[in-house]
Length: 271
Ligand code: 2HA
Ligand code: ZN
Image (tube, rainbow, N blue to C red):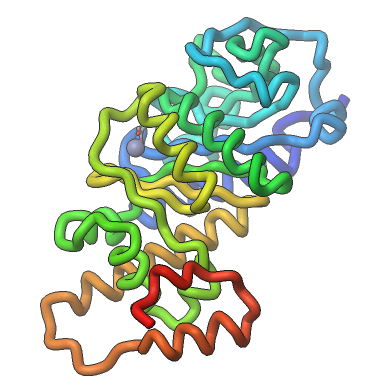
């Protein structure tokens, strides 16, 4: 059996949490990540018959039975993942009943998966129903995107349109736009269900005045999506209080989308 601390998926979690922490998106215990793993790959590092303990998730993830995830721990800090992955991360398998998580590694000292596990697993189910390649769900508090929540209408069409105007690459990177939820109590099944509903349509969902959820087929794609939205929000926050002299026009966005062959939300443009 190979040493789990050398597994590429543990390395990826260490790298991405360190990056997000240094970008200032994940203060204290802010943010959480779940990453669906390939069972054959995990089998090189862990004995599937050795369940350390079981954890009640509080809801039924029946479409994920038998699936294995590496997930950041509840109350844990992204800042600390790199130096002690075994205390701050865990590898869980969704048990036969759909509601129990079987701990295969990590959460040393009695930890458990993120309090946002319902939103994560429900988002995985929703994304997989529209994109069988989806593997990653990330929740984070990107500074400028969050700042923008306070000064921009929380309307999907208007919010997406503003972001698309801020960087030429935006309509190409997230042609599906961004979904928006109002402020809601976090950590609950209700916000999980609302997030998952949006995830059927969007890979990026804003939790009003809290943060965002992003999804994708791998770490780079998901992180790249989030940093692109965040960059656009930063440009917006740097310019929103100044007279606007220039902008990317809707006709130019159409040109971009057509040239790069992306299927974009035509109803989010004013054509
Ligand atoms: O896990 O970000 O939404 C900490 C959070 C809760
Ligand atoms: Zn949060």
